[in-house]
Length: 153
Image 1 (cartoon, one colour):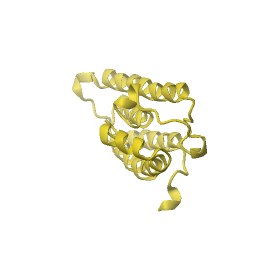
Image 2 (tube, helix red, strand yellow):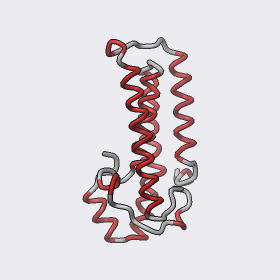
Image 3 (cartoon, helix red, strand yellow):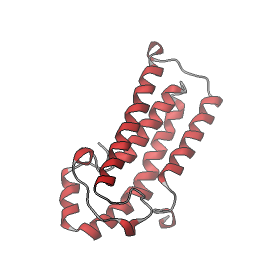
Image 4 (cartoon, one colour):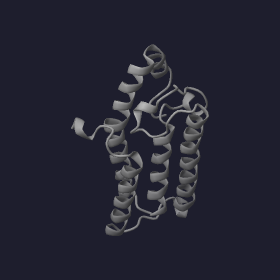
C-alpha cells in the first residue's frame, strides 16, 4: 500500500469522506440527539475546525514553508510554536473537527464512521510518511518535537 503514501491530497480525502457522510445520512434515518443541540454543537465543531486548520496554515505561511503536503521539496522550516505546540497536525485536526461537525449537522451519527475512516487513512498514508520525511530533514530536532507534542491532540 506504499503506492498511496503522499499521493492523494488530504482535502480530496476530506471531500470524499464528506460526500460519503452525506450519502450515509440519506440512507439511514436521521437521529435527533441532545434535545436538538446537535446543530449548535455541529456548528461549533465546524467553526473550531476551520479556526484550527487556518491557524496551522498561518503558522506555515509565517515560517515561509509549504502547506502542500505533497510538495516535500519545499519544506524550509520546522514549525513548533503556536498551534503546533499543541498538535503536530493542526490542519488534519481541523479537518477532522469540520467533518465531525458536518456529521452532527446532518443529524447522522452513522455518518461519523467516516471520521474514523479519515483518521485511519490520513494517519497511515499521509502523516506517517510526512513524519519520516521530516525526521530525515530535521533529524534530532524533529525527534525531540515528536516526543514533546502529540500527533493529533
